[in-house]
Length: 168
Image (cartoon, rainbow, N blue to C red; front, side):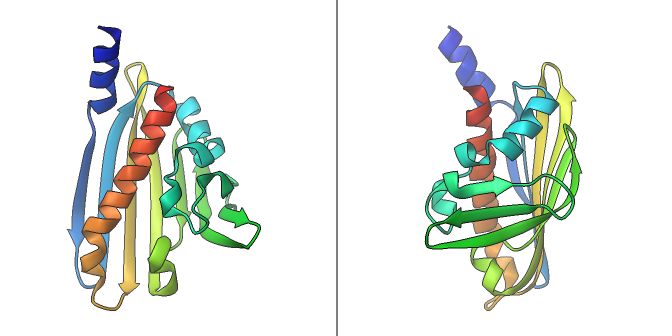
């Protein structure tokens, strides 16, 4: 019974959607509820990124190489023996409430794209509702609107990883 309840909680209230897409930009939003308070959730986002970010969505192939300095101007960076990359810059940090970073993720980094990744945290019963959104705009050969579904899938995978990490 306990296993069934845990499975229901892990699947409850998760949604993913491409909110908007056009030749000039895209917006994806993913929402879930975790069984951790907002303060613990925020700390997991920042301090646990190497545990929950999907390793195949890093330049090094290993999420343990990731770090976030959660203050304005701080770096969401990846460093490994053969190189390093700044994925995004923290532009808003409010522990337990909101973390917002600016930058182009993955293959969008080499294009003329600007993006914003936002983690919004709200208390929900004994847990936290997480709304993870990514908006991006600019030039991408073939049209940025064609990236909406793949970007949504990648963002959803990150949120799923965070949820599983918090369920441990």
